[in-house]
Image (tube, rainbow, N blue to C red; front, top):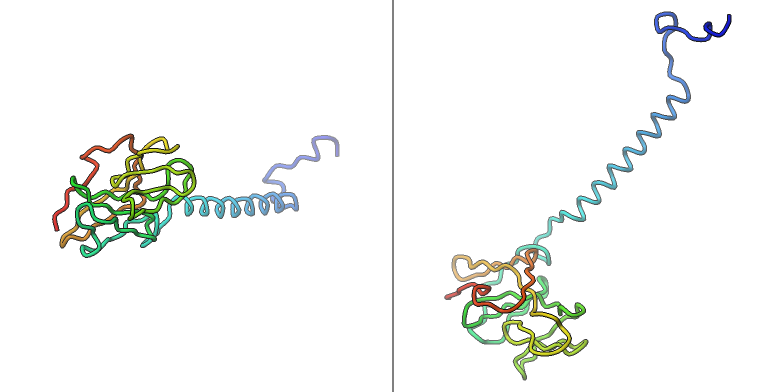
Length: 172
């Protein structure tokens, strides 16, 4: 038969699926399924479809919006305080910019005081003292018809200082 006799043209012999071809195709198929599942999980993690919780837009009723310079409204689902400054409304992320502790409102002193390392913030979230390097972060605020307010907890803005333009004008 010789050396060349081992090779056949496609016309002389029908192509049959070999065990090696089957194993290769099965491995490629299984790898494709695993990669598709990992890709779907990756997209789900970075593209969440949340409603009514942190990372989504939340509605604060007109009745819950604080009066100017009154005690802040605290939203536990959205992790923010809504304050009504002389310039308008600010929604401040309640996470301390120093190490991420939750910063409570202290009604006796009318300040936000971090319990972890003592950073102190005024009513508009501006750092007064402590190790925090800057003011509290703010979230996007939109005033809706009827006086309700939408706070987008997925749109957090890091700010260097308080400026009146950061507050959204509000009249009830």
